Length: 326
Image 1 (cartoon, helix red, strand yellow):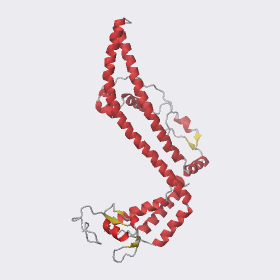
Image 2 (cartoon, one colour):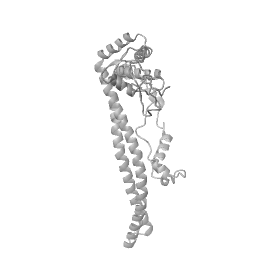
Image 3 (cartoon, rainbow, N blue to C red):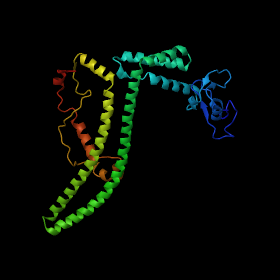
Image 4 (cartoon, rainbow, N blue to C red):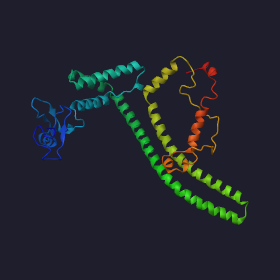
């Protein structure tokens, strides 16, 4: 029965490409041919018996959810969210924000269940007219943040793609580097500049340093692009007027004791990460293609382990608890 148009009785059996459309005014389903035939000349009443709502062709769309009730609620929430688009940052207190959310839910409930529809529509339009400037500003802010997040997502995909390419390039460069090392060792041995052991050690160190510099340059180039996108997203959030209000309220609030393990971070470390460590578990992971493609770094793993080992050292809790900070 779902494959038969209620208006013209056409079936999907005879027309496999038939599409069913609904209008948000009444959500009565009909095929695309009926929509073209009935509403091409302009607005017309809904052809369903007992439904007197005037429908327009440009409002028809394909039904996404099988349950019409869900379809209606999703559309209503989307429409209301475009008008009531404030966020928690826009309020001074949590209670004000909760009252705002409750008001939004009341409007959604009335429109979905057709309770006091005219009064609710009037309230919605009145709020939109009174807050048109703020609504537009919030829309633009959300749009900019979405663009920043999309840029971050694109950068993540680009990083993964670059890591796969770099893994292949490193394999080729490693093979080329071995050939160059052998040629350089033979050249220096022929010139007689030092013992064979010294020459081999010196040449290997020089080529290892060059390879590390190339790897560092690639990482820095990508980090610069990623940090720019992160700063953009962070800056957009800080431009919100609500953030300024919350900061002002925080300044006016009483001083509170400092807690070193509650969100604080150590900017200067008291250790230096060495080039190599005795770690049998990670000795050969740099040469494992599965780890290289995934972007695994033995040096980063060692650094993280040392950070965790040194975490909290140097914190004089008793002294810092006696100091009051905002």
